[in-house]
Length: 124
Image 1 (cartoon, rainbow, N blue to C red):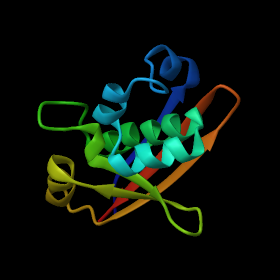
Image 2 (image 1 turned 45 degrees about the vertical axis):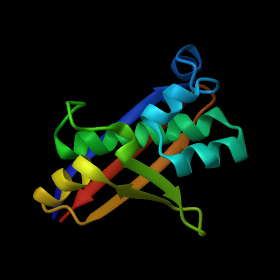
Image 3 (image 1 turned 90 degrees about the vertical axis):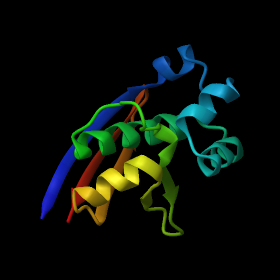
Image 4 (image 1 turned 90 degrees about the horizontal axis):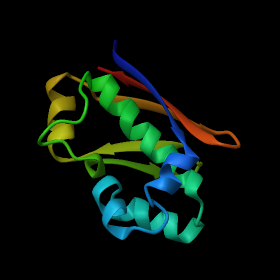
């Protein structure tokens, strides 16, 4: 059964203005260590904007926004060998997901010339 659906669009210019490509403190606040390592290997801002869109979409699936106790770096998006993105939750976000009965996530990420978009479905 579908528990939640979320989508988000992240504009490249916002990420540039906020210094995602150069400010390690901001990167650590938003992205997991593994995501940051992958970004440094690829060097593409689209990698970060796509993952940020997924993180926002996950929060929409959960029916929350950002509140005390939730950290965006607790939502990790890794790439399977097939190329398919996979959501891994930790900490408070994982607890909230389990409390809602969510045990399966589906995610799609796409990019245009100026933004990244993600679509997420949460199922029980």
